[in-house]
Length: 70
Image 1: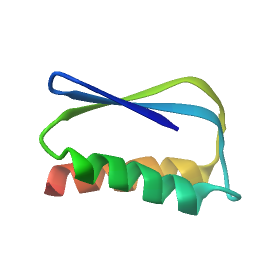
Image 2: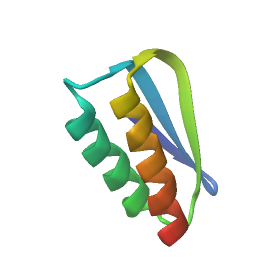
Image 3: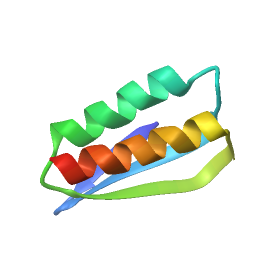
């Protein structure tokens, strides 16, 4: 996962797979990135994401909740 911060936008580039094998690490990485720059708009670029499981979708929902509480 690569992050890029320009102006008032944080872009997180998701790649490969988000599944049961890596959801815990992906969740930590995403939440950490968002917490580091809380006043930025967030863009998730999933162009290179080849697969996302239901566990991965739950992470995205949790991320949305986190953003709303910041």
